[in-house]
Length: 449
Ligand SMILES: Nc1ncnc2c1ncn2[C@@H]1O[C@H](COP(=O)(O)OP(=O)(O)OP(=O)(O)O)[C@@H](O)[C@H]1O
Ligand SMILES: [Mg+2]
Image (cartoon, rainbow, N blue to C red):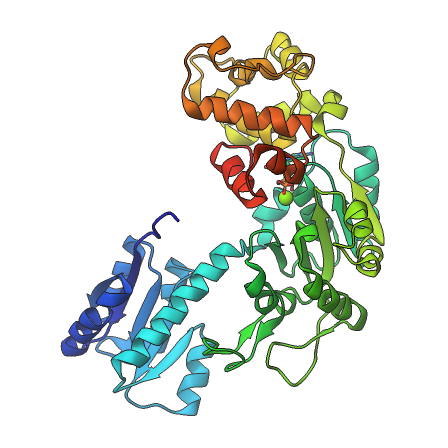
């Protein structure tokens, strides 16, 4: 496993002894501890670098700790703020949580208690990262949810889906624009001002998925030190986008079906049901119908999710979209420049197989813009030579002369994906690696964003 990046914790407290105790006490957790003795100094520290956890004293020489909570989160929105106070009270705790604090410790605290709380905060950060939970809000994201190219049938269905709240299943090869279609539905629909929560089911470890989706009550399991809302609740009124739905384990499929049917969820360890009205959009690049036949995917859930089905075609079946897509990406990536793409270039791009679809096109254009030496760009020169649609892949490395290992790996993966029409599960099997390893490699090699 790659080493985790070092975590930074800032203690903001005018009690210097406490700051030193924290610094020594947390050595074992491998976090870098920085100290500040006033709110202003703490804010400055947090503005200068990404900070993971902040221990914030309630009474500071230059103001109330609570008043620094908002500005701290503005500078580091994913930071977990843990309040420390010598005057614990229920009202104080409620107020701290209301302004966005993650947890609450009362002075004096045991080092064990501190380590546990900080560790939990770090674990939550990991989870948020692993889950690839993204919340798209505001104009910027709605502007970026515009589809370029023809796609008449996809557009018609997006319009239809936006006008009602039925579940939508989006299918298509990797990089065809499924996530973009999901965003387009959200931003054209009634809940556009509410959250769009995207979660990649393939990226969450199976044992964490249930807690992520449905949330948990404090004490529900070891380590559940606070009550946490699940993604379903977070998406209430808006959209919950479950990407790679084919990877959802069977026992959670039943729970998802129940939540969809009842429009209610129960947090892990919770006694009461909570009403949630989130529109569910799912996507997959695997063949769900086959998964249903092979009993890896529940048939009833499949029908429930695919009330509307949008199939996004691969790029090589809509090469007429190439000019508009290229123009769009050029103006998105280099908005202040006038760059040209010669007609021969477009023709060369049209001869390519595009196993990574629109995402691959975007990446190639981005690189061509980076390496250009004039106002013209030549993305086709960056494509693997052996992978044009009408040519078989080059079988030997020797035939192509010495090249960096990464280039060979890139080409081989591309060829294999192309062979299996972009199906990652089959390609991974043929390559002798797990699907998650393939997904990681695709990311590293620039096939995915
Ligand atoms: N029609 C389109 N117009 C503009 N941009 C597009 C279009 N289709 C795809 N893109 C862009 O291509 C990239 C890949 O699209 P997206 O992430 O939606 O693909 P995907 O099908 O969800 O891929 P995956 O299966 O890997 O999740 C994104 O940067 C997206 O904005
Ligand atoms: Mg996607």
